[in-house]
Length: 168
Image 1 (cartoon, one colour):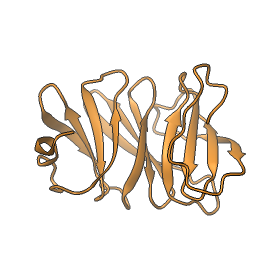
Image 2 (cartoon, one colour):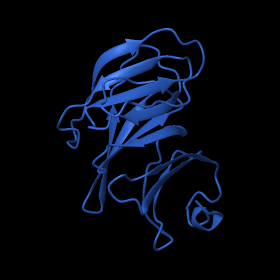
Image 3 (cartoon, helix red, strand yellow):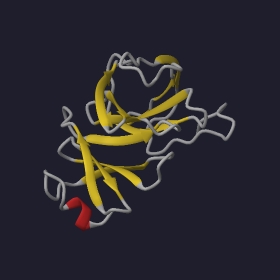
Image 4 (tube, rainbow, N blue to C red):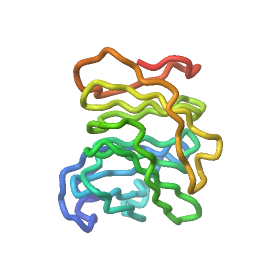
């Protein structure tokens, strides 16, 4: 993302914290900055087309659902928010805390089919959440499937296998 595009943001040249290319519309880029705002850019037209937020704190990670209409945001405070994009409108929703004492969300990754969401935290925990088939509804609430034990350091990246049965 060029400085030219970032200068279009209302928050000025705030630090970029996360980038995510929409898998169903690769010309669309989501950029999260340190002010807690998400900017959506059209890379072909080289301009900002919409924004979401501000959210309560800096956004530390983002992931698009494979269908490209749902963007999950991970915040430094450890919580998750969702943005549903339909017909040029953005609907924001908080996704329930699933850990009693969550640390910063440092990595997010949907499985290839979009039925699982892996959430990595600064304290080394990884949650695997079952994503309801109705994830594009305002009542989206993932179900904790599993908490993976063992890692003592921050999770900086997550990746599912092609068949979506394992995460590393």
